[in-house]
Length: 153
Image (cartoon, rainbow, N blue to C red; front, side):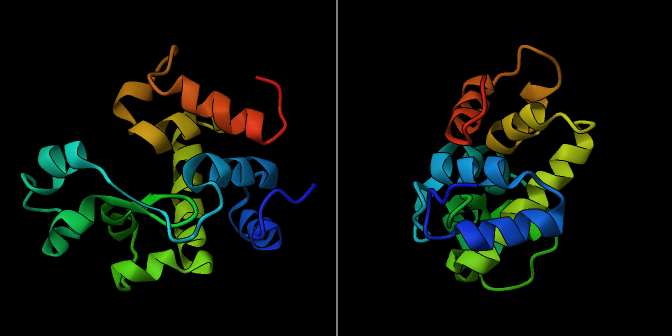
């Protein structure tokens, strides 16, 4: 794999740990954060529809920060906590930590999607609900990731 980010070696190790294709994981890093481990995006709709209204939200105590996408893979803070993360939200900015939790979530989605990496990527980007059957709601996101991975779409 030709390095595309300063994190190529780390991405390859994490991909191996979670049984993911390293080229796709690196393409996802490029699509999500452009390789910036300090990337942060507030997801207002997710906060209003889920975190704010959902008493069982595991990261709700962090207020709006629970609805932020952070780090290399832009893992949602709430999603990381739902997947078992027990650190501080800011730990997800550390490349090793954020990449591992994002990859763990993608692995979970890949299992849910029966091995369909495109469907898993669509669900990573927009949730499972709109990405159950083709055409997937977030198909353009998966196309971008696959193109950045050097794969044909």
